[in-house]
Image (cartoon, rainbow, N blue to C red; front, side, top):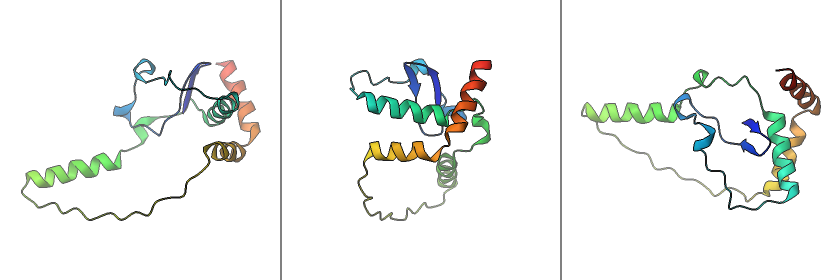
Length: 121
């Protein structure tokens, strides 16, 4: 997660190097309405988890690598057999409560030091 400007915040899953996009390419969700509490919780969580130290080249897209390996195997004439995946539906969660719990997991002191570091930069 990375905070760009006060009104422009991107929250997403970790991206691999080839997936990193310019902020202008990201849908902003302008048609969605959120409450002030939701906004404050979201911004607070992003602030606590933000870092300028993200280095996408250190991460590998394991899923993509497995797909490429299967394609290569298929090209070489090997048969690809998919194993069925059985999943049980997960519990329905309250997103606001999950955000609040996430906020409690990151110590406040890290937020203060991160803000000071960004102000110096």
